[in-house]
Length: 97
Image (cartoon, rainbow, N blue to C red; front, side, top):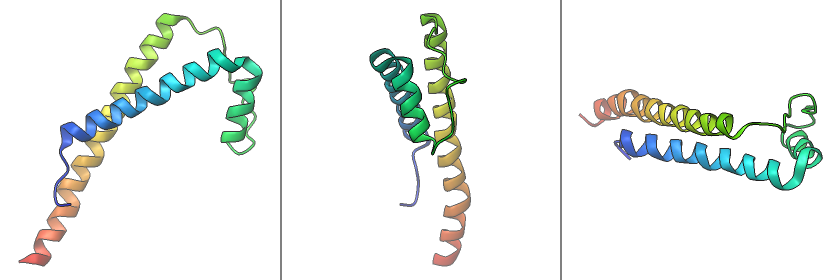
């Protein structure tokens, strides 16, 4: 691969972030506090998340978090594609010449 499309990469990372955020919301709604704590404790290699989990999240806060997650993912995609396109492709082109 010689070039990553920055817009497509940004969109892919942004949508992925939203999907993970929605998955977290669905997890919290379906399994409750104890299930959520168990899931994240297992995922984070034994880190105790009991005091971190807050179940009374207003829908407006969740919506803002969803938008923020898309923006952060989008920026992450832009950064990865830009760094790849600038740094790795320059070195690759020099070797070809």
